[in-house]
Image (tube, rainbow, N blue to C red):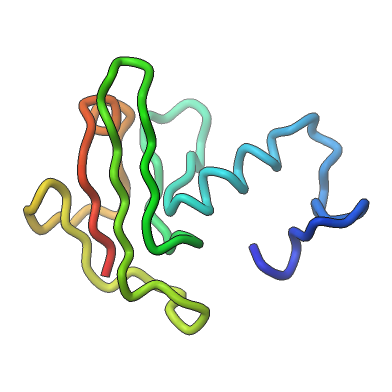
Length: 105
């Protein structure tokens, strides 16, 4: 994300898809993204930020904390959702829409 996407006229690699690349970048920078549009699963990855908050339209919130995040931390070693160890490598749409607190270590 920090090599192929930059704030320049040619900063979005492959940006001929009318914004889909931008949507992927936004999701990936939050730490999850949709791999397949026909699935309700969002694969977890390392976010760009140490902390992010998403206010959902239904009034719920998704809180993402990655306190150890940094330029040398490319991988998620452990994950907690709502205070419990979470062993899947994806989140579902329904889970996200209920609101959650995600801690990525």
